[in-house]
Length: 159
Image (cartoon, rainbow, N blue to C red):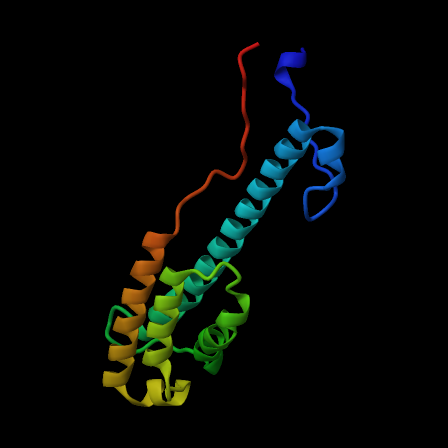
């Protein structure tokens, strides 16, 4: 039965307790490695969350700007543009991992949306088409940066 279960633990600190060096250098090294792995995983999670957030926002805006199958424009609200611009404005503060790939796409989206509001997009079909196309390209790039991860990690070791 013991072969079917495992137990993991972490010391509750944000750094490897230096007192462990005096107790056991091997335990200190092991816990330091676990802490590094934990911070790496946390950084990946933050990076992925930012990428996914921008992908969703840009995708929603691109969808609203493409129009319906009969050629009539879709209705959208000021919030569609505002949500993207707010994300772009806060990106620098949120990007704790300094994601260069995402930063490039954020700068690109910022250039596309500079000086543009929902009213101008509603009133100008050519502008709507240009911005929608640019957002579609950014969305395609973001989709390529996102990887599908399993929701749960289960490991069955041989007994």
